[in-house]
Amino acid sequence: MTLLDRRTLDSSQVIECAATLADAEGFEAVTLTRVADELGVRQPALYRHVDGYDALIKCLALRGRELLADALTETAVGVSGNAAVVAIGRAWRALVKKHPGLYAATDRYPCAGDLELEDAVERIVAIVARALASFDLDEDERMHVARGLRSAFHGFAHLESGNGHPHEHDLDDSFDHLLELLIAGIRHLESGLR
Image 1 (cartoon, one colour):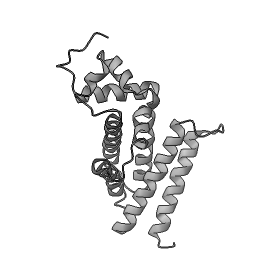
Image 2: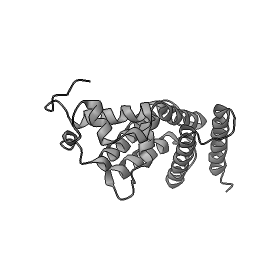
Image 3: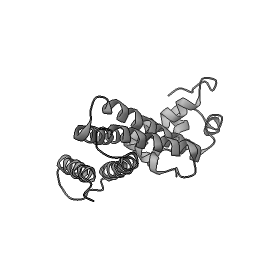
Image 4: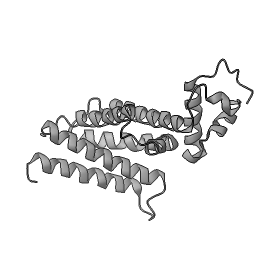
């Protein structure tokens, strides 16, 4: 790559480069030195655009959550009930498969106490909660269910992307079973049998 004119470099290029690197080679490949090399600049040039490694990882965590929120919003349009749970779950899993390194960044920077990251997480939970509107749940219950779905989908996708399922099972089948289990749980809550 030719040297990038430093006047043309901006923070979005730095983040995009780091995201591409994370997805192509894994999150661990993202270092300031490596990003600078990919951009054809010296590492100190990056400090004009990000405040260091931790700031870059936070930007990646935000970007990963923004992409997830956009994907969930798009997939939830026009679906309700069981189909909404299935659509949200499959969109979540597809996003992680498409952007495994970027998604891994969402776990690398603590969100508690960081308003930007907390807002990004709450946006995702709110999108999931809205997709559950057709279920007969009160608002508090819907939020608890949305948080539960977030945890389940994140956990499955995180394990899958990190080769955390050690046995040779059909993961598509396992995911379908997870969806069935979650839907049965929501229907159980609807009926007031807990």
